[in-house]
Image (tube, rainbow, N blue to C red; front, side, top):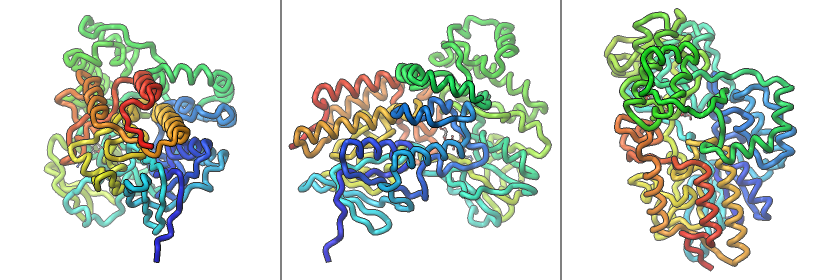
Length: 538
Ligand code: NA7
């Protein structure tokens, strides 16, 4: 029996913020489109990451869609940086307002996609047995959506529940009266630790690499301030469009750009700066971002501030980040992180003093002894930036798989397309500004660029678009050039930007560090030149 195929103009994978906007935009262009989402609802990252304390690290007024002034006027944020439930509500509101759900299939995983050179269309299969035949295939699967749980020896022996922060149960977890162990002190761990410590009987934190984290300065957003925001939205969006990171400020602060040189300060100057600005003193100096010696001076200020915050000197010592620069990893912002280590129901295991041997039935065995607890939380991060793309078995021209094409690391042209994969569009992928910027704003630009590109192809009876090898090579070289000399690629830096958190993953700096305005300019120039660097076939 012939397979029942559903013919569509475009198939989108993912109904997070990128998938929702891609669906809206392509539908608006008159295309028949469907989005597939493995979760039971919209929201993507904000659907899965329900761990206690989960919160955006960009102000909500900026971390929100800008395409609809009506939406901006209707939606009211209640905090400077919204917590996960409010962001998820916002995604749901957007889906309902624009009637997006009717074109989304929930609880469905796209398992494979094959490019058919004879028809120049994609044949896409889902785990529910659907077969889709589409001209365009859009991967809106997110940068941090493939959770990573390291293969700890003995993990299967643990008798209690194990939760990954990125796969948190919908009904939440009740920690009251429980003893809890948590592995990981990245953004997720740093947000979850203070909240779990408040609720649990006892919390043991297993820390491999202490992070640099700055206070979030979150607070409620009073109605009068939100009303002013609504009047100012046009200006706010204009400022974002001009900003290197598609946003201004850092967390809840709006400091002026740094002007001082730390290397010209005295010890007394630096101590006074700490008195006045606390942890944010490290952001006063412009040489910290470009000079490793200057950076280490700022790191030492940071450590001094930890010592001032944590009462027990040995506890403070164990919390101090060392051996890699500030600005190497994605900035972490926190609410009362260091203060949490002054509580008497919190134990810190600094794995630098002796690592994990195995997980046992009742806890974790380390070289420093055995630690017992009832519940284990893995705040161990993600197979970032490539995991979600490679999770789908994508096969392009000449039977070549994306897994094969990216075996030595991800390769894209403008972060939007890959040589050998015609009519496949990637959103927020390696080679795009994505995680170095406000994801929603830079994704909106990509979606609009893609929609314009597809309209151009249709108007000109072009049936396929594919990146050209030389253009892709030149883009990769440029992506590498702009990352060089930044703290992100310092030899002592290991981060998920570099794939360093996943054993065996090629060490490549994946996002585009040249800034959002420069990226837009390049993409617009490519389009204006008739999609320069792409092969268009009628
Ligand atoms: P991250 O930032 O990758 O943090 C993961 C944490 O888990 C980090 O502290 C890791 O230590 C730790 N980890 C990972 N594997 C192990 C093993 N095997 N043993 C001990 N500790 C381990 O993920 P997050 O979820 O916190 O944040 C991801 C992004 O989400 C974040 O940047 C924001 O953009 C939002 P390591 O540093 O590797 O030594």
